[in-house]
Image 1: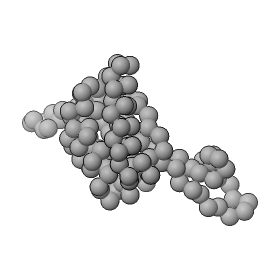
Image 2: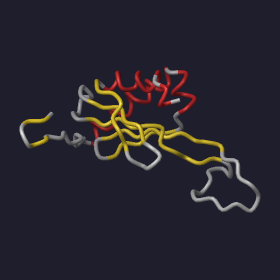
Image 3: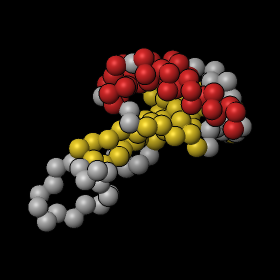
Length: 127
């Protein structure tokens, strides 16, 4: 939203412990019902009004190569799958974000929490 010379940027919602548990339960329920997200998302985390979704990628490396990130179970690296930024505690105003190669996040979709999860399920960025 732009008005004159000033730009107003929304800040993520500050969630209580109870609200975090409710949001986390909603996201986990959706992931369990989605074939694609169930396969891709290994864990989720809630921090600072954002839901981070992670996935594991099997790494191939030549013998003697030095890895930048430590491997999980000797062969997997964990990367961001995407994130959902919550602008209210009920999940009515959210954005689905994707992380670029330079570690910057950019917004791909706006809607409710469920709409953002549906978008992540169907969009090519989250493949």
